[in-house]
Length: 295
Image (cartoon, rainbow, N blue to C red; front, side):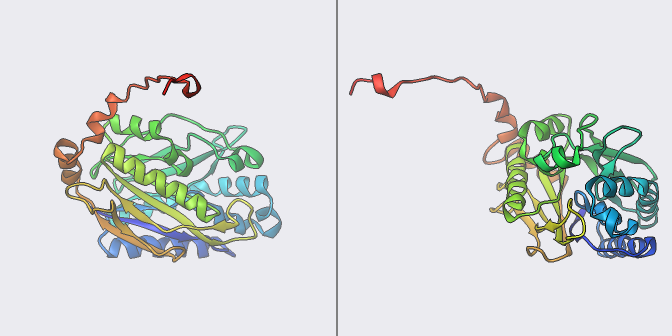
């Protein structure tokens, strides 16, 4: 399959038509370049706060509620584009209240046959805990698609091996890691986490970050990143583990061809067998007091 992952810019929109035109253009461009799976970033939907005006957009709580109110329209747009272009899409995540007192950070997945499902972020960053007060919600989800079994580890989730491992043990071969990071260090944390998950589970991890400055909204005021596709640095994959990567902070689709057969082959007969040998981590610890040791 061909995967397109976005280094996605946060823009100000004066009206819904502006946002609709942007998403339509991005999806159309990827489809015209032969992509089967399109990945948008974490909190990419926060640019919709601009539709509520500067005062609302500048307030953390009000901006989240404004974006949440538009999610039915957003989901309908993604669903229509997935069907018309015959592609699978992981939409940009958004605060989703869904009748709850506090929102979750939800990424919606759209299949060309009209099926919709979602993954909520599992572990919140410090900013999401305070001031956003975003809450984890729901289990990890395996998206069983015509392209294979896909899982989603949203931004900070990519830095926790047990989450990805649970998905992999459930049959996932491709992990999607949408992110929103406001510093170079934050971008590298997600990148390193994504590459580590590809190494230890011998799978493909697709990273899609936000980029650009949006000082009018505190949730996405600064955005640094470069989209990339990672695999295990082993047989059938590049020695660096990098299948494709973009230029830092340059908005663009990044494309990569991914083979499920290559993933299965490296898991079965790679130079190392990280996935298989995972269970050999015993966790046994021996404490030695160096101060009492005799020379």
